[in-house]
Length: 283
Image (cartoon, rainbow, N blue to C red; front, top):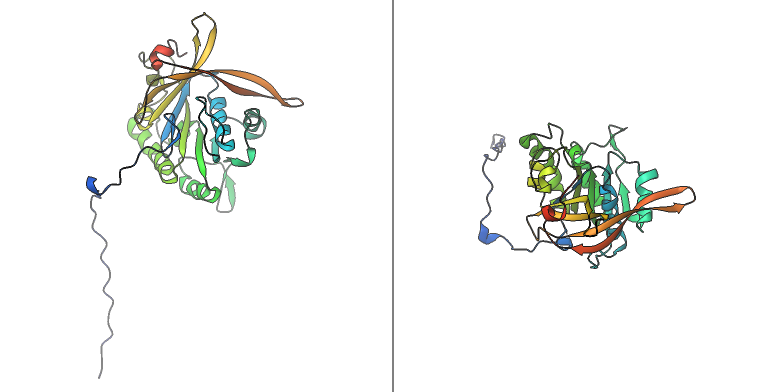
């Protein structure tokens, strides 16, 4: 008997809807710290300060600690892991790698983003465009515990002084860090002039930078009790842990090879107080 052909019924697209999660279905978890109270896995951190405060050198010192499973400034130890870094300002060969060597890093565990291959051509890496490729790279490297973006404003394609455009630009990077479970440090500068006594309010650009960051660290010169100049890295904001305290630090120039010098960060004692108290003059 003749049977007419069965026509496939096209699948209707799933209707748009809001995705919700019942609170009782969540698995409650503690914050996963890379450095307890200071660097959290899967979170955005800002490292801010005026020019010349050694922000990049501090970030490289922290990166070196990760690569060798070394000790943090408070004496606690971390497990060894890999580091991925994008720098739009410093050359890896003559600046970043020498500073890492000066800090005692295992260079085999540090990876610099030098560009993107698209359509068979090499083009400059764009953190606002190439995050899907970056995620694949992180998975390929494996055990990436720290991602450094210098400067973080490079992830914003629009006006970095507008909240909406800054959030739109940063959110994919924040989501990437969360998915890959790596601590993300974004380096940025202080704006000129004062915006109040809170150093975190001095971060250049939109307030969305500090709003999205779970931890804001600020580095600045200070005048010690003895009147001598010094430097302090302080916690200016934290939504997930203590939001005060800091560490003294100093910057040294060391010769890592004949004719090659690099700056190195040296940690001092822990200090107590809020960032506003510790950094009376962030400039």
